Length: 324
Ligand code: DGY
Image 1 (cartoon, rainbow, N blue to C red):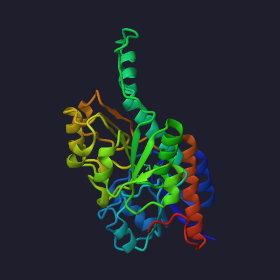
Image 2 (cartoon, rainbow, N blue to C red):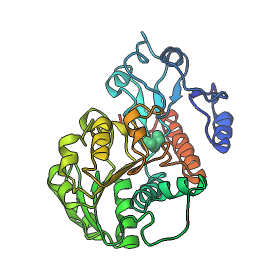
Image 3 (tube, protein in one colour):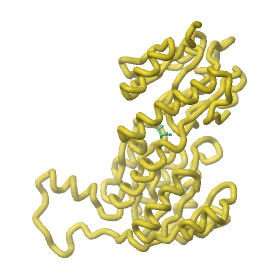
Image 4 (cartoon, protein in one colour):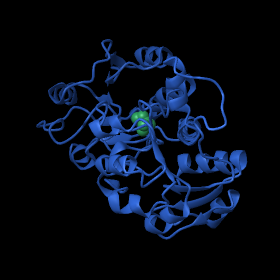
């Protein structure tokens, strides 16, 4: 039997690449260079499956092909706002993602960011490595207590709930949530969480706000200057979801004028480019290079979850993580 042809757009963990190569007619991207729109167009004419990830902008230009050979876009990652779903569906492509397997690690990173920005860990490390630390004193790098504070979670899906678990049971935090569809009372009760009717209602209540909603047109610039003004003047914003959810110019202004306490970002609107005004916010902004799922365990599990989706699809079954 002829094996389906599969293109992997970036390097993946070795164990997953080996399994893919054993089971499919695979083209690996050994250079690990992101594909251009024209290379993506060529791929859609040639391969039965394309396995993209967040660095592949699969917009109308990349999908502008007369008749695609590709029948499935099996995305490596839970977020898929980089894929133009309508155009992909027009070509008859199925689209899958990799939920669950990265929820723990992404939630761990959201907690890392929360602690880093509140306790000024980035500043402290930079100072020490620069040889500028003069020694302990009562007024040195005094930050903000995290334990017992109120955490607002916007987007209460799998990752949001894992953040709530860590924050509530680990740090005794009070949890307030907003989700676009109402959250089941039983789920809220697990974390003694209170549900708010809108983002605007939630923001003024929180000492920390953590974003866990999907990206895409519906949440684009959800956190804008009006909403930043609704936050307490000493509250912190954490983003491990998608860069486009935050208006970066508005956030930089809030940080520069200190209308909020600080922010910690793992994702950016034009990755890997960083807004020049954010680069200037050294005192109250922590930034990491999109590390949410970056553990050996999660990255390998994401790859095997893509394989599960491919197996289902090519066996003629509905893929377990079909999103469109
Ligand atoms: C995800 O899974 O969406 C991560 O952000 C990596 O793309």
